[in-house]
Image (tube, rainbow, N blue to C red; front, side, top):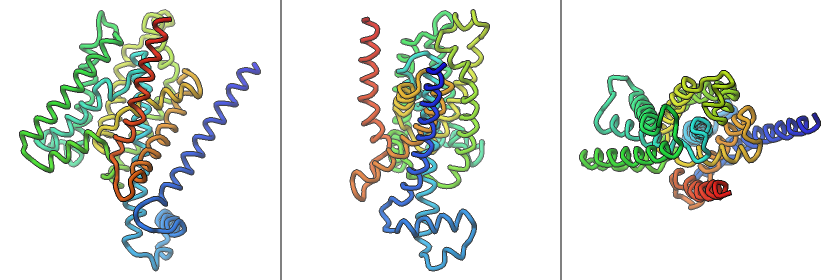
Length: 351
């Protein structure tokens, strides 16, 4: 009993610490930027915009107001929501295949979303879907690849982890190759720049329209998965053990993959491909609070937003006056971490 209380206290402290750290990081990051605007002026502009008290904006240059309200704040919120979506989808994919090495990037879902967006931008595919057709096309691409991974990566109606990973890597390479062919065939310099945007990832396109589309999707799906801990935990014990406990995971697996594809599709639409977030963050969350998804999912959500927010801050601060693509910063952290996981898993198998 005492051990359970101590464990609950530790989780509550970590959760509270994450919330406070995320709030402080958001407040601090708003003051950062190439424009020389004082901290006091930044907060006064934000307060005036949030409260609608335009009298407080008298004396401010319109350029300052636009920088704070139309550039910095949407970018910060996009970083947080993108981090949440990528981390959450990674945690879900790892539960689905019962392997800590799985994430949407490795399983090819991100590349499928990128291909869908490339088809939409350069060839006009899906334009009949309306003004958000790029996001919808990215979602369809992500969903299509996710089902192909399950189709070709399963044997005897069961998900084979090794095959899932190999099929995911193969499909990821195929989607990237097709995207490149489309860009070169279009002979469009802007298309080449757009491809680089998808491959390297960037938050530079952040605006309030994107945030308003993304925020409700990420919030609703995050709340949903916070109440799916029991099913996610059962997926870790395997389908056969779950059946003996009266739980069939097949339908849930399909639903979860669809929701993960929705998240990844819209994140790729807004930010391009940002790999390794879905791999690194859930693993760190497990180290902090254990494998129980009831605790791991909330920590993953908070730490994911925090992780990508600080990655964006570093991308703008490492080289003064130059913005490094955020995907590069994340890969610098994620690639060594992935190698560490591979080596660790290999060591455990030998034992």
